[in-house]
Image 1 (cartoon, rainbow, N blue to C red):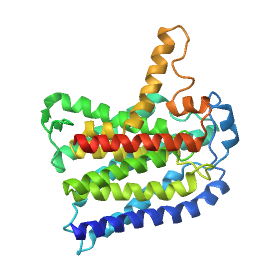
Image 2: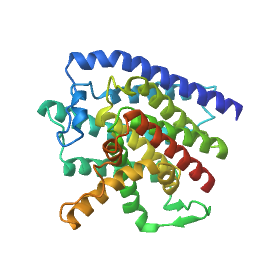
Image 3: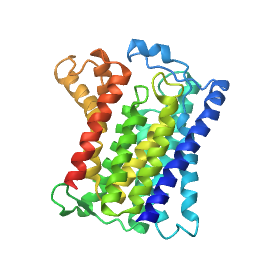
Image 4: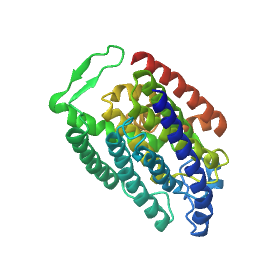
Length: 328
């Protein structure tokens, strides 16, 4: 385990420093090509000042994680951590990031906050989720049973595993995408979730989970150096869908999607707030359950600053992560 811990620490350091260096070079390049973020007109009025902030900073995520994974190819560490599940997880994240990049490029071309349509984006997400499930089942030893939190018993889903897994994969990806609306929020809360994966992997002696958590944590903290309020760069859908794909893939590969949903309850709340807002609006004849959805905008409307919202959501994520570890 000592050797594995050294490897995990090295993975964190590599992903962190490579992310910092890449973002340092990427931000002025994005400015030069005028890759500025369009701001949604129906969003908070004070976000208008952020218009033009460079976006697509998530382009740095895959090279940073890829640089870390090169370490696993060295003979001295090759036997400690299995590379195949990590390749499957980050391969799925890459495909989602590619969908996000296409969406970002459409937004930049049209100079508005609407890129791909919701139907187009979800169709592409279903395709890559289906491909990932095939790889996970065929090559990563994933079966159709999932673990139940707080009981330790497996639940065999049979045929229902496939539609539920597709729902989990696409829902998780989009939940993280919805969370990316306040400076530093998604990178910080995903960093908290990455810390949960690290602790979970350490407790269970699972090097793959520890490695994934270390790579994810290093990337998130590295990006946070540029994305903390006031943000110098946004990750865009390129980054948010990549992070969402990573988290979703780990839930499937570990056979603990429900545990991941508990630990990532902040993202579940963000997605649920949008769904509840729409349902309540239609049933009440135009009234709103929240002042604005997703949930972080509701807190902005209540008067909380962006740093306060990030701190509140991170604290909630820490508590939920501890609950998930206890239930594991």
